[in-house]
Every structure is written in C-alpha cells, then in structure tokens.
Length: 307
Image 1 (tube, rainbow, N blue to C red):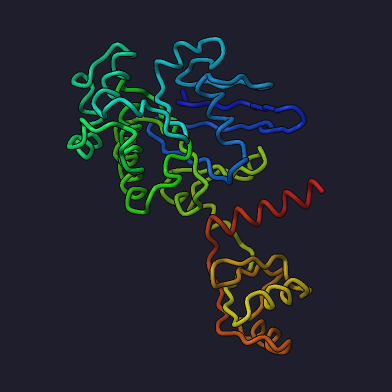
Image 2 (cartoon, rainbow, N blue to C red):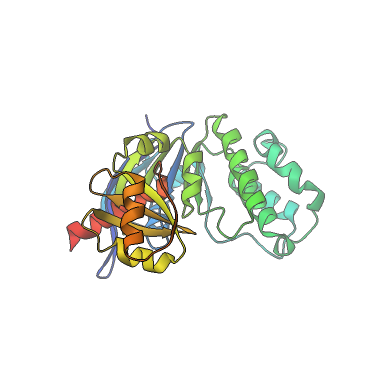
C-alpha cells in the first residue's frame, strides 16, 4: 500500500482550473518532490490531501484512508507544514511545541526521538517568542511541530521559500534523516536545484503534471542537443538565435544562453553563425540538461499543444 495515492484529482476556482486530472503515488520512506512555479497548483493539491479542501473530481488516499470519507483518521496520520509560517507568534518555542503535542494527545518527551536532531538546534532559544525567530529557526520549529505526534506522512509546502542558502541545506539534510525513519515525505518547491535532492519528482505547471521520474533518469533521458552560449551582448544573441532555422528554443540562464537545436551542430559552427551577425561570442559548449532545462522545454511544448 502506497503512503499517498492521488487518483485523477481536479479542482477549479471559477473558470480557472487549478488542477487537471493529477495522478501519482508516494511510497513509504520516499522523498517525493512536487516541482513547479507559483500558481502551478501545488498548494491546492496539498490542501486537498490534508483534508482542508475538497476536490471537484478524483480521489486521494493517505496511509490507506480516503481524504474525504476518513478525514479524521487522515489528520491523525499526517504532519503538515504550510508555506506560510502559521505557528503562534506570541508563544515561545517550547510553548508552541507543547501545544501541538497536547492537541494530538502526546508529549514532547514521548516523541522526542523523532524531533531530537532538529530540536537541539533551536533548544537554546526555547524561551524566545516564535515571532522573534529568524527565518531558518521558524522553519525548524514548524517542522518540529509537524512531527511531534509521530506522523506517517509529512506534507511540506514550499518549506524553504525565503530562507537563506545555509538553512536550506540544513533543512534538506533533516529531510534525508526523516526519510531513513520510514516517513513518507511530499515536499513542494519552486527551486529547481532542490529537485536533485528528492528520490522522485513530478514537474507541474498550470495544474498539469508534465513528467514524473527520478531526477537523474529525467536528465539522462533528455536527448535534445543543448548548448551553453556566452556572448558579449546576450540580448542581441538571443534575438538572433531565435530567428535561426535550427533553433528549437533559446532562453537566458544568468550570463549564459541555453540553446536547444532541432539537430546536432558543432559548437564552432554555432559560434561562426553568431559572429557573422556581428555578435561577439565568448563561449559555445555542449552541455547536459538540468531539471530546469527539462521543465522549461516541457512547459513550452505544453503551451504549443494548448494554443
């Protein structure tokens, strides 16, 4: 039995379809990432699976319990960390944790082994009001509160948004530790670089799943010619590349342009074509796709189909 089963779930807000026939499953002890930008439908799906919102179509199960018919059982089995910090800001760290333990009929001491590795990092500040904590400390407290009743499934909705790079790394290290304790984790994030930290990922855009696979397998299966180009005038190079007959897509990535072509070309050939147009090119090199490259490629393909 899968820890989470999403079966053909759809949801609309008026004329806007937030989710369109979503299907996937998450296994026990699996770290599954839902990767997509703001507005992709991630939070809507989380609210449905944590019994806070009803789907228009389809079904969801968490640890074998239907999220509508058995919502009380589901709430006992899950830990939920919403994207926005939602703990009591005028209570201390220790008071927040005690409060959430009491709600579930347990104590900090009874389940301390599950939160110990996280809680020791914030324990020196246990008397500080939650509202006065830094972003990283708030994140760790919220995770402790979501875990204090020993849930079998953990839902984390964009937990690292707005958090510094060091705290983000520490947070993902904590998730790896939880996974080893056989907790199923569904985490959403808009950060494409976090995809590689998951066992499997689902790329989601405009309420639709574009692809589901292990991040490395997704990268290995991408077989389109891809080049990184660095030019003195990035804007002009982009404009020119988008007029070339061999260009499938040309997108800016920091100081580089990532170019996908319809067929393979030698790097010197692409450089020469640009320089013929008076564009000074510093570098052209073939490259392996990143998850972000794959996401953007699939997104463009989906837009072409729908238009």
